[in-house]
Length: 51
Length: 262
Length: 165
Image (cartoon, rainbow over the protein chains, first blue to last red):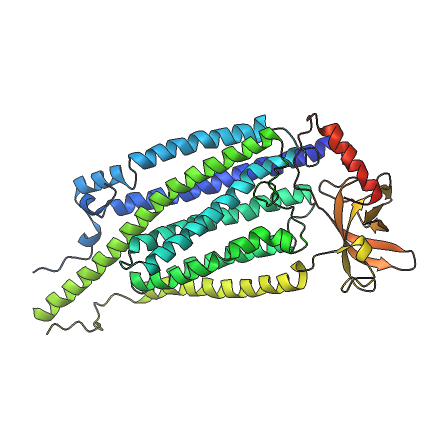
């Protein structure tokens, strides 16, 4: 196996670990914010302790 | 008294919908944390993939460390906060459900990041060790920590009153956190494939190049800010879920009372 | 007194939704218990004594030569040779050496003067450890490739010839 191929394989794993991390963070964040927006529609602002 | 119709219970006046959609769970503080998180995440990518040097032995593969270690740090932090809030719920007179919701939100975030830590660790392991997984002490105890908190979240979803949920999950939260020192010290207690801790060790030496250490520091700061931001949002969502549960129960009792007296 | 007993009439909402919601956590808890059992078993079988050092093979309890072993040692300088599909090298630890014949090309950051764990069994006829899996143990030191301390650390790496990591 040539050094170039090894480097390409490494790059796939390295970039992949960053992409995976940020994709999961983005997905979780989206789920939390969407849940918040949906529920906020059904509750009076007076009942939200953070407002 | 007219019982509320089932559909109206989930609908809100237009102006309230708009107001709610605008506010959501965000506040000035969360927006500030959000901006700080985005900025430091940008730095993490720049330093992790760009400015930091390659390692003598691991070469470019060392760059995975800048996301792997912060995910572990965040999971440890999250599970410790879960334990602290569980203790505050159990051992304070008020037994505030606010503590329980912080504990639950923190555990949920911790599980997500523990999963990420396992995944990025496997990718790093393949490049350096030559294998994705091996049943050595660190990997095995980490897997146990992960499934323990998946169990914690499942127990929270079992149903019952909010206080029942809070009480049983608080006990698990206080017990499961004891696994963290076991995971951290597993590489010293037993012979392990995984390397020993470079920063959080007992000899006080940090055998790491300066720019590598700074990149790792940026990662830890970025993930800590992200944790605070997520915790604030998720605990607020949980507060609304609990409130809607209570409202649903109140409505059901009101409707039943109206039926019985009509 | 208000009757708050559970309703059984036709307008009662189906209990399916509520039941479904509680089944999922119960299935997850069952899965967690099974996974926990598997992990603890693996911990007791594999993790508590992950490897034998080269100098312990045949002398330490659990490191008998007639069983499958995981042996840890430092790859010796100038010993790595490709022989067909196999890779031969010598590992050493605490002054003891062992010849290894690995069935394949080691992955990871395998190289001379780095500690490895080889899985396999000892062949007494050829006095060679026949490996079918190699794992590279990297240290907790992180040194930049262009660091001026590189020469110093390379000098330290030369110590591998003595089998003392």
